[in-house]
Image 1 (tube, rainbow, N blue to C red):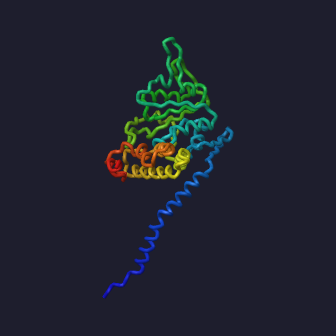
Image 2: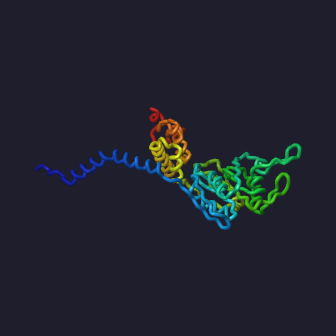
Image 3: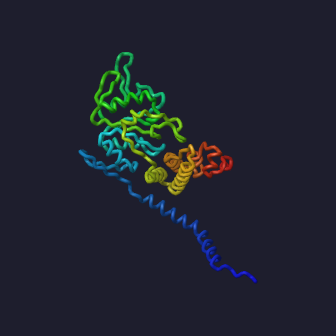
Length: 310
C-alpha cells in the first residue's frame, strides 16, 4: 500500500520555502528603514538640575550616565569611573567639566609616571614648575586622572592626603584645595589587580579606593550607534553592518571569557574608514579583527586568518 502524502508537512515546507525566498528582500527593507531613521534622528539632549546650580543642558553626544556623574560631582565627591576600554569614561569627565562650567585638566598614569608630573617640582633656579593637577587643585576645575589602576602605588598613596584632608604638600609648600576642585579617575578594573582582559593592571590600596565614589560605566549602545552614524554619513548602511559585527564579536568574547576587547572605538574607527573609502572587509580586517590568532578566530567563529585573506 502506497503511503499517502503528509499534507500538513508539505504545507509547512511550502511556507518555509516562501519565507526563505522573501528573507533577503525583507532584510533589505528593514535595513533601509533603520538607515532612514538614523538620518532623521534628532540630537540627544540631557538636562540635569543640581542643588544650588542652574539647570544644565548637554546637547553633545555623551554617555547616558552623564547625569549620574554630574550628580556625584555636584555633591563634591571625587569619582572613580570603572568600565571596559572605549566606553567614553574620559570624554564624560570632559563633558562634565563643561556642563558644570569648570576648567578641565587631564593626565594619564602609568607604572613609571613620576611624582613631578602630578605635583610639580622646583627647577635648578628654585622656581616652581606647575602641573595640571596643581592648577585644578588650587584654582578649581575637574582633574581627570586616566588609568588609575595603571599608576604606581607610591604615587597613588601621595594622592590620598590631597583627597582626604583638603590640602596637599607641593614642592613649594602646602596648598588648600579649591572648593570647586573635583577629581575624576578612570580604570578598567575595580582595583583588585589584573584580570583575563586587563592583565597589566595594578591592585589599588584600600585607602586609595576609599577616597572615591565609584560609578560603573558600561558600553552605551545608543551612544555607540549615534557616533558610528555620525562618522559615516555617506556609508551609513555599511557602518551599521560593521557595528552589528563588532557587537556580535563582543558578545561572543564576553560569553567565552576570551582576553579580547571589541570596544566602541573599533566600531567608530571602522565607520571612519568606511567614510574615507575603505571597503567593509578592509574596515573589519584593519580595525576589528587585526592581530587575532587562529585559535581566537576559531573561538569567535571567524575561520582561520589565511582563509579570510583569500
